[in-house]
Image 1 (tube, rainbow, N blue to C red):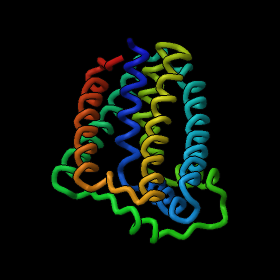
Image 2: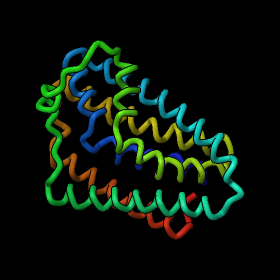
Image 3: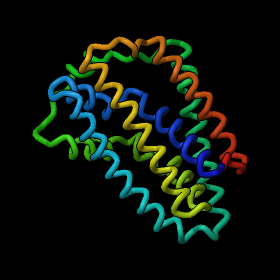
Image 4: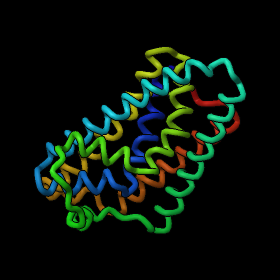
Length: 213
């Protein structure tokens, strides 16, 4: 049951981050317009490789602090605080209509260099300060909590996190490639609102040191 909770919560948290407009979303839109739906897949492969390296690095480093309750508590508080800020932003921005999904407009604004899509997925992610801050707070807290269940726990977190990215960006590429209109702003904002509420719940559990798993 705990492993399922790790996977499910990681999936929802990944959706929340992936759905917000940012560099990786812009690259996905641009490449899908120019090169088709497969470009989004290769972008996510690059993104997932980078995050796998990061998770392994965190794991090796976090093993050395698992016996230090002060550091563990600090990671939980900072991770929970960032989640709370992120969830509040999603709820308020979606409720007030501050976010929209302008697929073709965003894609037209970007002109990329000669990098292949896998390298683009890596470089776009690592150059995003928001992504770095996310992993330094929320990611570290999740990896630390997942490690209590060994390799299966860590694997559940990683698979859930990456699956959220693949599903969302895959839908974006599909919508662009087929001209589908199922991702209108009303649905988009509704999903963001629900994800924001979920993040707030997760944040509180981290802050009070009683995570869901």
